[in-house]
Image (cartoon, rainbow, N blue to C red; front, side, top):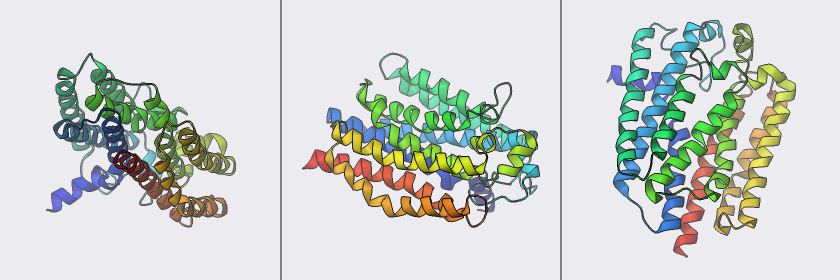
Length: 304
């Protein structure tokens, strides 16, 4: 039991909502459009995507250790600074790397099977892009997260990539509107990463990790955070107005109090690590709740 708990910490299981939400959303949109829902394919997609997420988290922990990022981070929080299992001597770096590679391999095997029962090689292409973004987020030669493109990579990987893959496995086609309706969830997962970069500012700057918070500075970065937060709701309104999402999806606006909390807490405390944590938690909650309510809105429209 202790070993299981340790590995759950290493893979950062509480953050798996970043995968669960887009996979559920993509499958529900496919059901809405086609009247079909293949449970076996859904669960295989979910497990494969979670394995990719595990591989990504473990690889990031390993390479952040290699580059010294987590070592110089003296203010880790529940939302940032890595899992700390390497820094606390609980699991060796080599085991973390091996577990990462094994996770990607198992996820890839599931992807190959799903590709074999699907048209074309769409699933293989999505899988290759996913592994590339996940592994090379911190690994050489690309080190995407260190090069100013980390937020975009996470947005693509846990936004359209997950949603398109989940949709395609069910529907076997990719209409253009699926790209557009993935935007709110994409923006929200980018915001989760964005707000979690604030506590890591000093450590990231020390080792040359060029996150947007490091590039812009905290004062300017929090303005971008606020603009993107407002944009999420404007995009949902636009998608409903364009009839790309049903009217019931406006129930996602029930999350506005949480968004307002995140807005004002971050505005007041963007330069204070521990006082900012309610905004970190609220942003994670927004990603999950908005995604679930958008999914629920689609189901309600289908039923009624």
